[in-house]
Length: 180
Image (cartoon, one colour):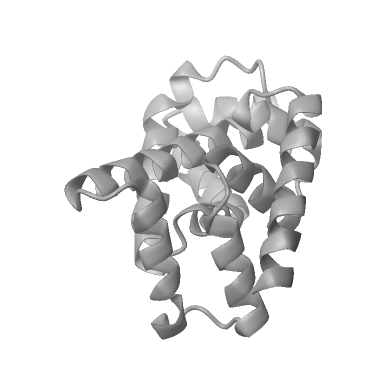
């Protein structure tokens, strides 16, 4: 992508906005979908949240201050949208977010968009037992291969804290996988 500030200007300019936003969609639709899907697990939910994420990005681009990269800002929006969705869904279903996530993983085997094997299913079950922050950090580092510095900008947490969360998550996952 061209110089980020120039690109943002193109997104804000009514004459170049449509083309610039199409470029943004092409560049970030897949990675943001994968990020959201890692959080909510369900394909249909991830699709809906992705649409909401791009709407929010489009509506709030004028408020983007540039104190982080556009990538980090969009991932923060996607993360917040996914977490808000999960909280609302658990509230509607009157279950905790942990129980909701376990049910979603139990349904994962029937999901036509899940092409994992038994080991991947066991990994998803282990991840579901982690606290929310450890889940986020583990998924972003392990599945999305983001650097700690990028995760730090997205989640607003120190790199040291992220490393500790990731380490704890790995230990808990290893313990779960070895006993199940």
